Image (spheres, one colour):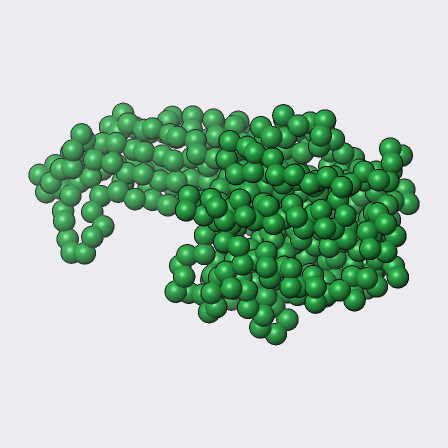
Length: 455
């Protein structure tokens, strides 16, 4: 029996194990779930050992533990792949919006509904079952495998970079592999080759030392809410082009070949508007919607508050106004540099009638991956063998900071082999994973490892 046949014959077993994994409420952001995090890490270690990994251990960090495993039977001449995933999940709230209990996985049609189903337990577990399929048929995978599964991805991965820096030799590999993205559709495979980074700040504008009566002081004291809105309005023009000096200096232009590749992505404007709940698209006129949402930097106010917001009227001139502002960055833009540029500009345009404080909250680097590397070509071939058509190469508008971390710390590129779907409702109630993609994902990874073993 070959690995593919074994995987197809053991789908019921693989599914039963996945459901067991999904029942563990491993919410990393809530302290009361710390025992569940530890249970999930121990469970995953046991599954890795059963799948054939000679070494698997739960390694402590200042936060939640990392599960590390390795299987180096292919020898020094074979490629070594570092598989990354995370076993923690988002909080399930609001619970009242779930149609089924979030930690009682429920199969409806071809989908399994549960928190963490697609992000990232189902996708991470694909690699464990692909490895088992080699163990039970040919004895071992044709390449060397290392695994790092973290328990803090949904809480910002505060322990991950120190862990990677402290274990460079342990994690040394030729390529990293991550399954934490989606394909374009059930029958349309795709490979993400670029990710946006992030810079996130909180702004506080202060006017008077206390809230004032707007009838007594209005017109003579600058209202910090009004001023904060004026300042925010100066950050972009009407089409969303960011007006901050130097903001675009490091933005890599899209060449015609890449724009042609992005134009291959199927796109239904009317369906997109319905999904977004908008009447009309908006943004930089010189770029398509796909380019705007994946290959261009952005600036968005994520929250703004101040003054009186309770029922009824209160004619107050508030002392303070606050806003949270995020910038999605493209590769080559450095989050620290962008944070400084935006902060300096806001301070420059703030009038002397108010004071301003800016707190950096979060940052992450974008990444772009060579579409012609041996690993990317092997992944494309593997998708085509399973799905019957070559994958479309796409950029992703969101962020997976570990991709840049692997580039900068370990010096390796990452292959993003996702198997989710765009409607999997990640981070939302009723998260799901399409089970045919779970099974096809295992087969795709088997093909990928086989092809890599031939190089």
